[in-house]
Length: 467
Image (cartoon, rainbow, N blue to C red; front, top):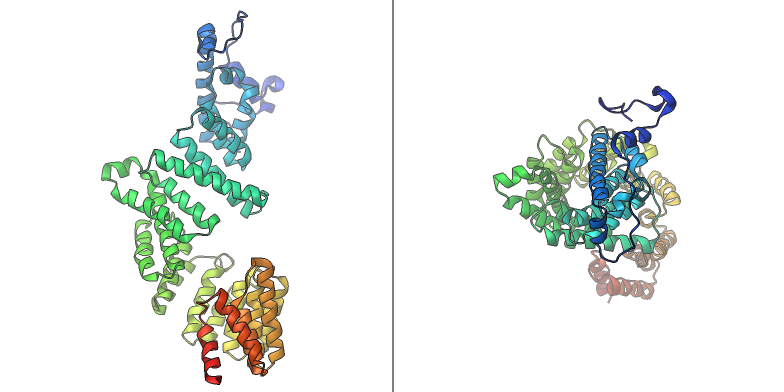
């Protein structure tokens, strides 16, 4: 925490009598209320204001003083001090609650709570505010974003959300972002954030693109004066471009992604709202998808510039795959080996194993894949499929079949669906062992669930040739 601001409070231990900051603040800003006459309660919402005009005036002064104090503390990021002084409002400033003057205080407290990661409490404060003013753009936007942040925190294992609560928060965040966009449809940030919510938590890139595109279109429609007045939204315009490009590439449309990522890089020059390692990686990925490997490698060089290899394993992995595709397995292996062994995630190991296999070092690749599969609780099937391929190359067809079936079993257990790669190599092993009918059954199972599986035509061709 920073030191006391220039006109503010000294630390408690430096003050005579050990007076706390909270005590001093209240001595400075809270006048003593005059005794009120006892008047029977009334259902009229204006009666209390008419009856206690003097108290209302003092409450307004108190509200103003609290907001000044909070904003001064905010300058120094003294979030804990803000919360210690003014939360909960019901206890610290009951008169503000009584006269309906607590909303701006609660908004500030919600922001401070968010800054220290107390997101559930921030959500509750915003919900109180929204109940009093259900058509406020800022409240819907803030609540949507705070719910989104809580989902991110759950993904990072900072908080625990059970599946039902996670689903409910996704729906609530989506609803509040959408309402904010109805109230002020020409803004950028909330369309971008809604797109992120849909992409990150609903896993629907095509649906997310609608919102990223709206954020992009809104910014590009602004005249110079509007852009100046809403300059803070430009950052999220740039991020919308980046995410729009990523979605296009994910959906197999790299030619549409390329101008978007190029515009993102151009608009972000000198700002780096999107980190260089991310935007140049995206450029490299798109260029590789467009079969422009030399340009892709140059983009990845830019992504790697000044980076710790442990933080950019995905860049080295893509670099290795590009080199492998050019028949330079030795250079690919060298690239991916730059990632420190202790931080090599499964996809790094898979590409390293592919490079080793291309170099004829199959047993070394197999040992690496077996070690990865033993630790991997999410994507073990990918290692098992590679082990099936290595066994097939060695003529160990029973082992190929075992690995293929294990890959399919794991995928069904974890994801609830078949693994077409696992079944493909199981079918190949059955054919190699003369069990054509079993292989045909497996081929039909793949065709039933994954009719567009890219290796399916090869199986069909083999069966057609065999009559």
